[in-house]
Amino acid sequence: MPKRILQGTVTSDQNNQTITVSVERRFKHPLLQKTVRKSKKYRAHDAENKFKVGDTVRIEECAPISKTKRWTVVLEA
Image 1 (spheres, rainbow, N blue to C red):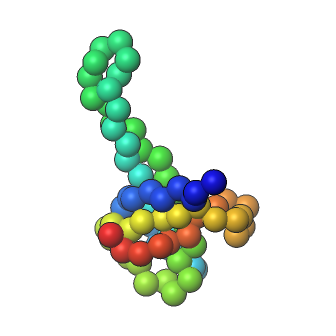
Image 2 (spheres, helix red, strand yellow):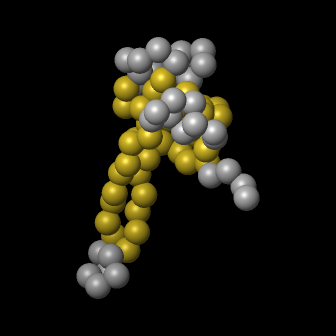
């Protein structure tokens, strides 16, 4: 099964080797037919601490690194 790759914006880089990425998805509401925006935060592994708040990055699913980290940064988008 292929690994999922998501694109989002870095919202926090306070922790060592960890960034928080906010990923937004858009979909049409089934009844109202209105476009709805939902966002979700993912914690991703950033080994070199090179990404800062506001950067657009791609993250990839990986084996669990810690209690909350299941994603790793692939590259800057």
